[in-house]
Each structure stands twice: as structure tokens, then as C-alpha cells.
Length: 265
Image (cartoon, rainbow, N blue to C red; front, side):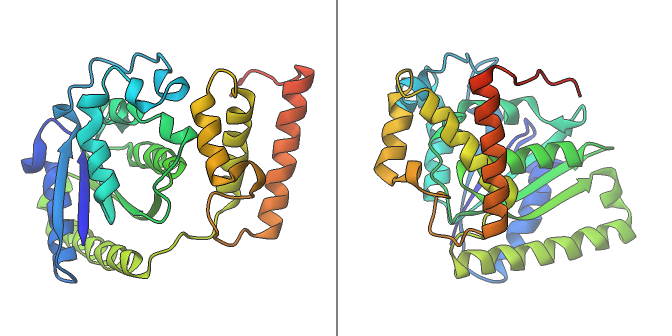
């Protein structure tokens, strides 16, 4: 089994986040032989921020000014049977370089490709923020096609306390077993209502930008997604699909009438 690790920390594999990921990989090895590829987001040299030029969406990912620097992460994800996305929590969310990594693959929201590939999410912190960091990562990578099969937020200082360490070890045992079985079983999980709404919103975006983003439209045309209810052949729940359709209808109406409202919290 080939495991890819995207490590969003400047402390590398020896830091707290890297150590927790290594603990997870050791448990995966108890179930099966694995080859591991690791990319540290700090080493990708993606610049201070994504330039937001939209070239990856309008002209294709090869037009990104940082395409060569981002390619190790793309190759890792393409080759992996399982991907571990791991980040320290910085100021109640993921690290800056992990966010930069996500931003540089924004085109995958429009042209997702990793359906059927399971993912595990890991965060470490001295305090709070696991919910925000892991929640954001789960949403982002789902839009790329991955499905999350395990999450773990770990308090770094707490690892020195035996009762807490025992709980973390039990969680790692469970996640490792679940991840291995997810790879062996294969397939794409049944899409949720949120998934189906995301699909329809993505379709709206691609439809509305055919002229400005022909690369996206061609990608969808090739796969027949404009006439589908979901990206894959996974069974689509009827009620969830109907709810997603209602949401799409309201969005379309709001766009057509100019009645959509700014977000006010």
C-alpha cells in the first residue's frame, strides 16, 4: 500500500505533528506493508501567498506560476492509496504553509480527481483549534474528491501524561485499522446532502464560466457530469438529492434575480 503524507509544519517529521503521523504509520504497518512518500509544505516554496491569478482554472493547472514547485505534492496525491494530511494548529486554524498548499490546488474544486481515495486528517496543538483546522481540511479535500476516514486532534503537551497518551494510542489503533480497511475495500462512500450541494454548486460555477474557464467545462463534458447527480457511480440518496436540488434552485433564482444577500454572520 502506498501512503502519501502532506505535512504542514516547518518542524518536519521530527516535530510533534510528524511524530504523531509516524505513530500512525507504525500502526498501519502492523496491518500491511507500506511505502511512504512525504511532502512538507514548508519545503514546496509556493511563495508568500497564492497569487489568485485564476490561471489554474482558466488555462489549466500547468499555467500556475508555481506549478513546478507544487508538483511534488500533486505527484504524491496521484500515486497514493491513502493520504494523510497533517498540520499543527496555528492561531486556532491550520498552519500558513498548509493553507498555502490548499490554495495552490484550488483548481481541484472545479476539476476534482481523487474519488475513491481515503484520507486521514491529523492536527496537533498546545490548546484549542482542532475543530477549525480539521473541519477546514475535511471540507477542502472532499471538494478534491478524497473522503475522510479518520480524524485525530492531539494535545502536544498532553502526550507526556500517561492517561492521555493511552487515549491517543487507542485512537491511533482504531484509525489505522479503519484506513487500511478503507483502502482494501475501495470504492466511494455514499454522498451526503452536503456533498450533493457541493456538487451542484460546483456545476453552477463551471456552467457560468464556460467562456472564461473552458478548461473546467471541457473536464466536466468529458466525464458527463453536467447531466449527472454526482461525480461517481456511488448510489445517490433520493431525499438528499432532492434537498440539494432545492438548494440549487434557490441559488439559481438568487443569481438570476440579483436577490442573493451578502453574508452577515
